[in-house]
Image 1 (spheres, rainbow, N blue to C red):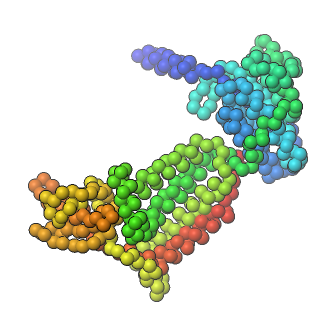
Image 2 (spheres, rainbow, N blue to C red):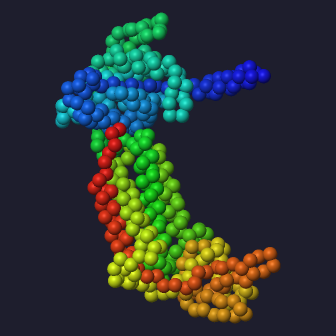
Image 3 (cartoon, helix red, strand yellow):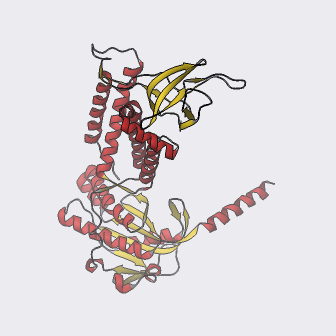
Amino acid sequence: MHDTLRIRVIKGLTRQIRRSRKPVTVLFTDIQDSTKYWDRHGDTQGRLMLDQHHRLVFPIITRFHGKVLKTMGDGVMASFKVPDDAVRAAIGIQQRLAQQRARDTWSCPNVRIGIHTGTAIVEGKDIFGDVVNVASRVERHGAGDEILVSASTAAKLEQTVFDLVKKRSFTPKGKQRPLAVYRCRWKDHPSLIGAIPPRSFVPVIGRQKVNVVVHLIASLGISYLLYLIYLRHVIADAEGLALLTLEAQSILNIHPAALVAAIVAAAAVLVVARAKTVPYFILRLIKAGFGFCLAFLVFHLPATYLPLEAGPKWNEAIFWSRNLFVEVLADNTSARQQPSPGSPIVRTVDAGTLLLLADVHTQDGLTWIKVLIGKQRYGWVPRVLAAKIGAPEKRLLTPAYRFYFRYRDLYALLVGAAGFIWGFLNFRIRPA
């Protein structure tokens, strides 16, 4: 029984592995004499040199449709679907490194690059198979500033376009047949890096990407929280803006701020999660937003929900709304033409909508609230629906209230602004 199950599992895995086999081109980079560099300049300068290599190389690999699969010591492993893209990326890398060395000779390394094309097992963000081993062997037979491609890659390229010349043949470890390699004379190739800024984009991988996504979600979340606490009251207090939000809601059947916030948040998180590089300034803003979120919440939550009195003006209002508000508590709440259950429905609103209160009327035991629903148009909403057989009492509107912006709110925003500045100024790039 156990042998039968084992055979079934193996057969299933074998089928899955076979389906994962795809043609792929693998590119390896390796820094020449990196050990000597670390020994001569120390760990800190060695790590900075390696980080600069990654920051120069990653954007070029991405630009030519490649995927950075992993970093291994002082090198990078990347994959490409099209061999031409792999060679163009290699040329771009050497051009970028040569350009950087002309500016700063001591910190920019000499790199050798090896490329091989074959069939590999592609699983998620990694690849397996002989193509990886052969690509690594090709790279090791190169010298600093060289680009070597295997015969299988060269066969899929136009050799005159990439100026390939046969260098030598060697027998890779574990192989019986020799492998021919070709050298790409990239120094005479037209520039491929003119549209790739060397420093404006920062590579983000692994834990860095997780940190960026978490900080971004926190920044977007605090933005929506500020809307709920403050901005929506300011909007609702201005009759023209309040009507605009109502019109948008009637079309979309959802509170517009919630819809916009959800779309922006989902799009932003998706873009960052999939991005290989992010503009440096955007990263600083995301960190600054996280700083605002943290500082604001640390101050605002205890100031609002604990019985604190930090000064004589702590709870004194600086600004207050001209109108009284009621907030809708249930979706599909109907506003009627007259304060009567049988009156025609003139508008339907959803939970979370702020409405301007115009009048209050009590009839047949129900308290009706007159609210603004359009330009010079009003509707009546019962504050509470009475209990019926099989249905409990249901509150539709909050009690009427006026919005007050107090000194404690001002202090919370100022503390949040200090957190924003702290996050912006103290942003640090993790080594790539």
